[in-house]
Length: 589
Image 1 (cartoon, rainbow, N blue to C red):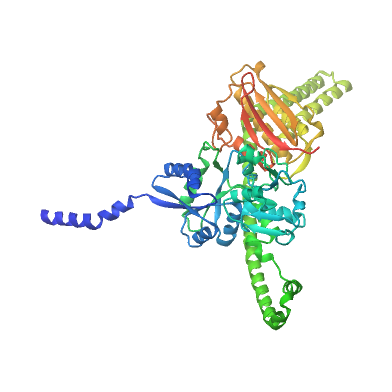
Image 2: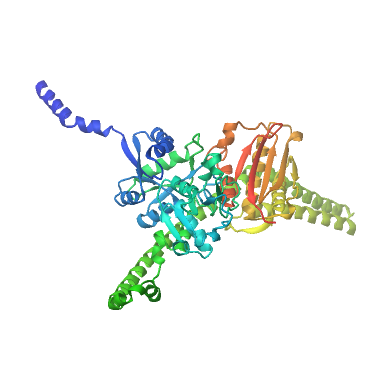
């Protein structure tokens, strides 16, 4: 019997043992990366991401697969990768063709926001006095990376189209030279082309003596963006899942990415950005996923092929048949894309509704924290009303009621009732749920309304100083309730930071100033302050310094400010205790 047991054990080890050992090996997670630089350089740039995922996802082995445009599309079509990291243009094309879905967007230190991070620069020699703007390139020689290069051609193409120029017909030559982009700077420097199209910030990365050779055509003013650009800015690179990616794995990777600390180069990840601006670019140019919008007319075809008119006459019947068939295919494809766009818009509407729900809950949370003092404030006018009513009853009972006494008591009762109604009205207006809207308002007025609402809910009021400077003549295009929510949240956090101080020493200072086309609002408290490390994490979701905090208030405030084209930051004051939290907004004179 013992011999039998030993034989069974030996057979199990031979046949089952290798399977058990293999199951213990980590699962490979393949991440397809659009490569536009040397393989070693790309590996070095993305190595911190692989290290972070390997640490955050035990049991998984992340592997980076560098691919060009064609190979990346083939990998997505064959589902041979689990995730894709690519530029915004490539992402939109793959999203519409294969249904990939972004889970996070790259957030770099040099960009003011993940929504405004990618642009193109058109460069010429600094000595070319005849070239001052993009319009001056008509009839000139131009070089670019490639027709499907997002930052290396398509962004500039849109700006040319806005000027009524067609790069394929209005330049004397349009040459695509491929990567690396150093080919373009070299060609411009050697005079082999009049202008070159490169990605934004490339010129700033050159050595000063080399950079001085070039000049940027039609530079645009982009607030907080550190580089010159000839085009508007677009969202940064996303990371996306395929339809075949397991949902549990996608959720784990998304969580790990959002928790990834910034690398020494300032690279981190944030919530998925809105890529609608990329869709608009492709729709305007009728290229990429919207190339089906191109239409060929018979007249344009005759003009184009006039040298071959005799051949065209022979093939005219075949051409008509082909045109009818192509039109049918275009209509079918248009219907499919329209359904896909309808589904996308429905998803975006649901996302917007969820965002509004989160903001509404955040406002209710602030009111909940202040509910005790709010009840005390309302009790004061109610107590006064009760006292005056009781006094009238006593005068009636004693036979001392006069018209003057009734009038005096009625006036006081009406005043206290109006005071209580004003408090409740401001709270109800702040707490109600409604659709986001934009309107032009004076920023100092919005700040004063938020201060009034804040003080109206407190029994023990801190001293609040508002320094408006010269900002009274400027307006902002905002959702007023959302901006008041931001100011109210900053005031509440400042008051919480000063709970250890005596009531007489609790003070908040609000400073409004204007720099260029940007308005800044700085809220300072005089509490215990924060460490530099805590300031860096202050606006991350679920990070909090309060024992009972959720860590969502400032994260929601940052999302609101960035959606308005601004930025939220925190820093220690130049002197004295406390913390200064500043947000910016584009302004209009």
